[in-house]
Amino acid sequence: MTLAARLARPASTIPFWNVRRRDHLVGYLFIAPQLVGSALFVLLPLAMVGWYSLNEWNVLAGSFEFAGLGNYARLAADVRLREALTATGVFSVGLVTLNLALALLLAVLLNQRLRGTALFRTLFFSPVLVSLVAWTIVWQFLLQPSGGVNSVLGAAGLDGPNWLRGEGTAMLSVIVVQVLKNVGLNMVLFLAALQGVPKQLYEAAELDGAGAWRRFLRITMPLISPTVLLTSIITVVGSLQVFAQIAVLTQGGPGTSTTVLVYYLYQQAFQFHRFGYGATLSVLLFAIVGALTLLQWRMRRRWVFHEA
Amino acid sequence: MRRKIVLYGVLCVLCVPFVFPTWWMITSSMKPINEIFAFSLLPDSWDLSGYRQVFEVQPFGRQYLNSLYIALLVTVGTMAVASMAGYAFARIRFRGQNVLFVVVLVGLLIPSEVTIVPLFQLFNSLGLNNTHWPLIVVPILGAPGVLATFIMRQFFLTLPDELEEAARVDGLGRFGSFYRVALPLARPALGAVAIFTFLHSWNLYLEPIVYLSSPDMFTLPQALTQFVDNYGGPMWNVQLAAATMTALPVLVVFVLAQRQFIEGLAHTGLKG
Image 1 (cartoon, each protein chain N blue to C red):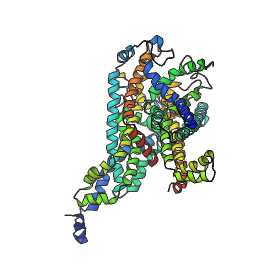
Image 2: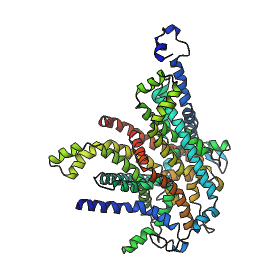
Image 3: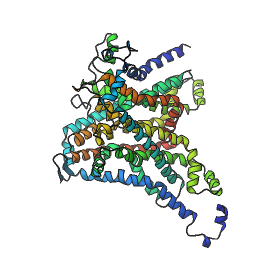
Image 4: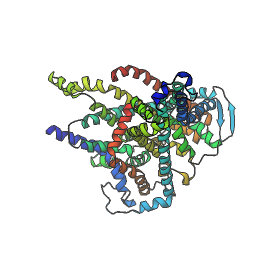
């Protein structure tokens, strides 16, 4: 029996187990795995992290006692945390600025009518596909005092520093290595956005006598701004989660200059076995990411009009 | 013409820091240890002993298999779970839908680092630490899978209603029209989900070092950092051989299918 014929029957004879009810059930079944997963691996751990953060918990000593807001008081007084937040801020700002600027530059260059841009696109994109730790290990080697980077500098008559052990250069090194690894992703997103800009606009502007720079500022930037916003948010949130690069390249040093929040969290929880304080740091990370995402949501609403 | 030459020049120079490290990784892994600090494009004398030692220092074959099977399971699992949930949220009307969607979306807000302490404790109490369960189950069902669900939902929202009405008139049930009509159409979205899920799992570092403690269970990123000699110094040629073996397969697949890779990711980025 076709759907139309079924619907044509009078309401009273529609069986209890009708299409709509069955749909409800199918809907629940379809989302069940994801829902169970969210409950078990997102919401439950989130509640647990909140509870842990209210307790003094040292795994090694086997002590677990309610501490109220004690961990949060410690948070406020923790000098090393302040250093970690500073390092995180420096890393995020440096990474986002450099990443977006370079991604935009590469995308504009590759958006020219030029043979072989596909090859260059592939080359710039390739580090995205290289395993993160493999990429980091190679750079760890290249950035040694006698490594490849300094050999190149030496050939130019310059004396290179010990990149990964110098207070001033360690953070810069981590940022650059990470930008080179992932800038291809943002480049591709920008490229897609650039290709969506109508060519007639440029032609019209050119007729009106607008130079290349002016066309870029007045036409390109406004039209790709939703993508700029999107990529910047993705990149900011991603930059807050940097861990493997730090763990492999600098172990947070020299001093605490590259100890970012997630690395500090890892140290406290899994090296010093302070689970309670680790949980408190998790809450802090959650709060920061949550605030940024909320900001994105509000800004995005303003951009939606633009996208349409 | 002059403009073109300048442009090519700029692109070639910019390319160097992107291409050279990979080139250097591959070629240096075939250099004898005394040559490894010399700066050259190709080895003067070829030495593949690093590739043999990789398997002697650690159970590298086993670790490779660990990474591979975990990444494949996670990818297939995520595609199944996310496409079903995404489909239901986009195309089926059921009570409580919006509230449940918001509940699931919370996962998007949560970096995995936030829940690592309680999850470690959870799996510890289940006796599942130093097994691969946390590395498989959490990514499929937990927060990392939510992005995939979101992408699938966005895609299914764009399908025209008529398609499924036609399927239903032809006698397909809900599952039939999901599996036979909607899912085949969703191949671009599924492809993108597959790519970034695989890469994410292949690159995972924090979780393995938290959950796993015996070398037999290690995954590749974790294993790569363990190639040290008896004095704790890094064995560079061995480490680079291992890094090459980790990076190369993904790179080769990428070169073969680069159009789908890049467009798939660009597509998803814009939609997500």
